[in-house]
Image 1 (spheres, rainbow over the protein chains, first blue to last red):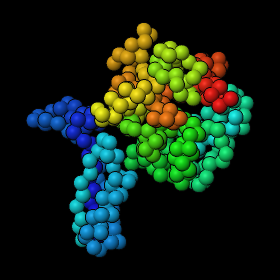
Image 2: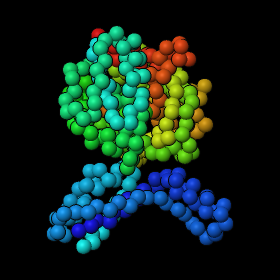
Image 3: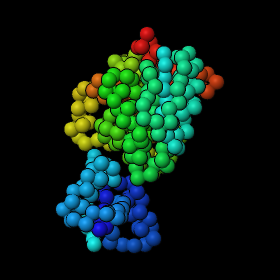
Image 4: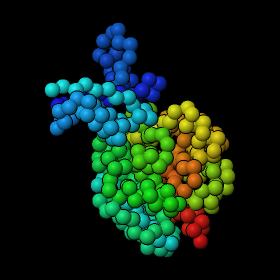
Length: 80
Length: 229
């Protein structure tokens, strides 16, 4: 089972990299872009086949290492 | 006085801080590889500057889970002073010994220059040789020094007097212009509730003798020596 994990900055946390991408898009002439936020995507291949146990494990590794919950949120989906 | 400097893969200020500690304290300095599991007997632990694990995932995130860190946390909790400089500050935050996190500089640029700092707190082992409110000069060199914590944490840090160093101008004012990285409240360094664990972004070891262009950094190491004796 694979976990597809997305880590994003919490709302209200300044994202200077997202802001720089936003400015670059504007300077390239793209219009109608309200805001850009940058995040991370991490794929973890799990040996666990049971969905509930896999979910518990992913929660734990997100909190323990993958995300810093002071500034980041995480979300994930499990795929077979 | 015995000191120990933790060396992570990617540390690059470890030998500078060793020289500074040897010259100022006159005592032995042990270099402790991150893969070791127990700290030697020591009066001070330093986490040096650098780019531990290449800053993978987040600055300090991998280093905070190094084998040696379990014992660093235990020693810190037992009251041994721990000093985290630059990347070391980032590691202390990721390890949960200090609150908050150091984010990418608001300018997105690496800043490498001298800064002025106000001594906000002299009641720590690292600042006992300074005057309250004194303005000193140290140098910074970082890409991720933008201190961030939620409002409740910031208020608690301020109320408890745990903001130890703040970026200021010549008049001692914490202005946006004096802030090199966008840190909240112009925070350059904080300590834990017991005032034994200190993290700061500027590098005291880079200005610790006249040959280097300044001596204000020396007084941080002198403070530890004075406190321990």
